[in-house]
Length: 212
Image (cartoon, rainbow, N blue to C red; front, side, top):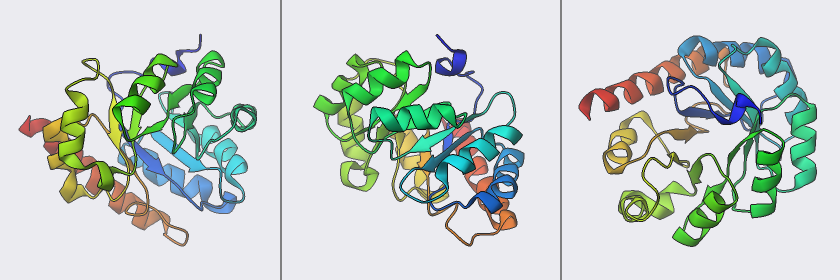
């Protein structure tokens, strides 16, 4: 089994969701994120050029980084991501077949869940982390209730509408990380803007840890 599935505890648990990233911008945007402290980068497959972006990001990634794909819906997608050098498989849904296939390939699996049934199905299939999606729908009260029945220590990352200001409320009820999309990057965002926004999210996350 690859050590991709046992990431260092020190790795910042913030996932940069780079939807619409184009290959020409990949190195600059990736460097800005890595410089700011991000170590988990996800390029959703439902935009052109995603696999090439993953290859380019992996080429510049620090040794402790996880780079991979989002919106992974089929096992054939998992093969394509791995061929591109990806280590991370993120889905918007809970598909046990995709989870098991990813884990068997030595990749880090973070499927999307919104209910206890989906959460337990994902964990039974071997998921390494659970993505709460859409986070706005589940809410902090929903996450608190969900965590009351999940195994202690389950990594759980709200995704959808996360801002630096909203992170503390999620952490208070048990979130262990976040997926951050449009508030961090959208097509046309400059690398310098990404660096500045990323630094804001890192500072907010560190602030949440101090308050625990």
